[in-house]
Image (tube, rainbow, N blue to C red):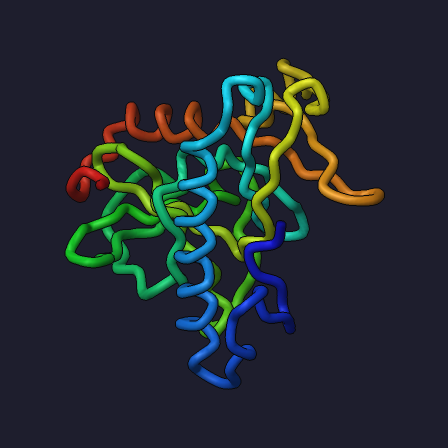
Amino acid sequence: MSIVTEGQSAPGAAAEPAGRDIAAWRERLLDERTATLAARRRRLPDSQAERRELMICRVGSHDLALPFEMIAGVRGASDVVPIPTRLDAVLGITVIKGTIYNVVDLARLLGSAPSARTQHEQGFFLLIQSVSPAIAVRVEDVLDVMTAEVSAISAADPETEGRRGIEGYVATGEGSQAAVIDLGRLIGALIQQNLKIGAGAP
């Protein structure tokens, strides 16, 4: 169930526009798909409790699977104002619909160097649900939302990958997989390091 793919239109959507309108077009599609999936999740029967919904994102050359229930919304990345901080993962702050968000780079949060990008390749902000201060996690692309059986997620090594926030791995297609990220633990650890800028998230 792709949220958006390069060069394609979502079912029932207008053709992808050219030029500067593409960011607004993709943001609108992401909002619509996020709302649809959230409504579907609320209707999820108890018999599917052993399943997880995951948002597949691209960070560098890696596909990562994030817990969908933590994502309040997706926005095209906007300008970030740098702030004094000792937290390497915090890029600065941005304002979205009147709320100040701390912008956290997911690559840095995982201990990797952020990839080089141009002014027109800023990526996307994932707005984290119900945290204070408000946090927007930056990823390079949002690829898909999928439902996975818990039993189908292979465990990661807790002594190596686990310390970096990797829970395990899930197949995302023929011959491809994504690392399942314990985003809640990573965000919680960041907040405990005195991340104080910004107001509470919606």
